[in-house]
Amino acid sequence: MSSYTLADADKPHAVCIPYPAQGHINPMLKLAKLLHHYGFYVTFVNTEYNHKRLLRSRGPNSLDGLPDICFKTIPDGLPPSDADTTQDIPSLCVSVSENCLGPFRDLLHKLNGSASSNVPQVTCIVSDTGMGFAAEVAREFGIPNVGFCPSSACSGLCYALLPRLVEEGVTPVTGIKYMVLSTQSNQSSMVEYVVLCKRNDILLFRMFRFHCSQSRFLTRFTLICLEIADGSGITKEYLDKVIDWIPGGKKIRFRDLPSYVRTTDPNDRMLSFLLRELRGVDKASAIVFNTFDSLEQDVLEALSAIFPPIYTIGPLHLLVDQIRDDELKFIASNLWTEQTECINWLDSKEPNSVVYVNFGSVAVITPDQLIEFAWGLANSKQQFLWIIRPDLVIGEAAILPLEFVSETQGRGILAGWCPQEQVLKHPSIGGFLSHMGWNSTIESISSGVPMVCRPFLADQQTNCRFACVEWGIGMEIDDHAKRDQVEILVKELMEGEKAVELKAKAMEWKKNAQEAVKPGGSSYHHLDELLVDFLLSEKHINQLKIKKNEN
Image (cartoon, one colour):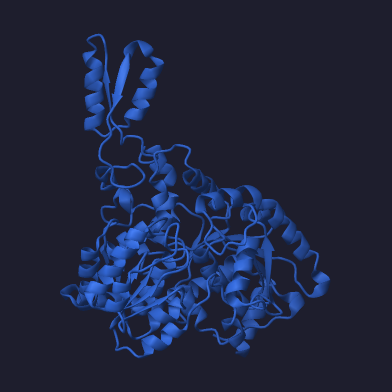
C-alpha cells in the first residue's frame, strides 16, 4: 500500500475509541493505522487505566505517537488502581456506560479547540459497538459515527438477535428449576398444569409468580432442582437445546450463543448492558466487522437486514501488513510485555511441529484446570509454546509441578505474553489450543493453523461452534476436560487422521483471507467504500484520487 499525505489543515480527523480491553484495543488500533495510511489525522482514546498499563508494558515513550497520530485518555469511572490485570468486565461495562459520555464529549471540544496547533477539526468518530455513548456525542457534533464490532459476524448476529431471544423466553433462563406444587384441596387441574409446563419446558417461574397472587390456590410448595451443567445453574439439557430460527448456522444450540445469555437473572448486568448498547448500534452510520465475505456470507446477509450498512474489512492485520511505514510498526497496544525470545525457540523447530497454547487476555482458570492442561500437554509428547499470563490462574500465581517441568524439558516453553501474529505465522506452528477469542480465531484462520477449541466466555462459544461445524478447522474440547481428553485432542490435532483434513481446510481459508485483502479483493474494496460513503468529505475524496493517480 502507498501512503497518502494531505496538508495538516486539510486532513480528515478520526477519533477512535475502543472498548477498554486488550481484545478490543488491538483491532481498533489496526483500523486506526489504516485510516492514518489514507491520510487521516487520528486521535486514539484509551482509558486512563489502560494508558498506564501500556506505558508499563511498552515503555514511557511508547504512546508519544506521531505528528498525526496522538493518544488521549478519559477516565473509566472505576476506582483508581495501579493493578496490572484485566478489569472485571461486568463492572467495567456498567461504569463505562454510565460515566464516559461527559469526559468523551469534553475531549472532542478540546480537540476542536486546538486548530491553532495543527490539529484539524474532528470529522468522524469510529467507536467500539460497546461504547454506545460515542454515537450520542457524534450526533451532538453533527459528524458520522462508524461502529466497529471487534467480534465475529456470527457472534454479532447472536447479539443482534438478543431482543428476540428475550422475547421468545430463551433468556434469561427461568425454567431450569421446576416447581412441584401441592395443595390441600383436590386441585387436580393445578397438578396437570405443572406437569404440562414441565413436559413442554415452559418457564414455571412465571406460572408460580401468577399463582402467588392467587394465594387460595397455594398452601405450600417444594422446589426441586435438576442437575446443573455449569456455574450458571443451567441444565445440560437446556444448554443442548437447539434454537432453529437463528440463520447462518446449522442447529445452533443455546450453549453456542455468547456466554452472557447464560443467566437466570432478569436484571443481569451484562444482559442489560448488551440490550442497551444494541439500541445504540442502530444509530450508527455504519458497522464495520473484522472479517471477510466468504467466511461468513450467510451470517452477513442476515445481519444486513438488522444493522445499519455493514462493511467487512478483515482480516485487519493482513491489510495493515501491506502498509510500508516503519514508524507505524512501532505503535502497538499489548497490555503485557511481549517475550520475543520464544520466536528464537520456534526458529529451532521443524515445520508444523509445535502446538501453540494461549487462553487470551480475559479468561481465567482454576489451579486444578492449569494442572489438567499441563499434564495433557506433557502426555501428548508434542512440542508446545504455552502462554501463561500473570493473572491467568484465579486467586494465585500459576505454579506447575516440578514433575511437569522435568517431563517437558526441551520440548516445551512457557511465556507470559508473546507477539501472537508473529507466532501464528511461524512455520513451526502446527496447531493452536485456543480460547477462541475473535482476534485469535481470525489470526489462526489467516495463518492456516487448525485449532483445538476451549471457549470460556463472551463470543468464544459462538466462534468455537462455527470453527468446528461451519468452517471445519477445529475440534471442541469439553468445558471440564481432564488431562486424558487434552492429550487425545492435541495428538489428533498434530498427528492424527483428522489432522490432515483440518490442515487442508485451514489452508483453504488462509488462501481466501489473503484474496480478500488484495487490491480488488472484497475487504480491500469495502474499505474504499467505507471511506467514500461515510468517513471522507467530497473534498477529501478528490484529494485522495489525485494522490492515488500520482502513486
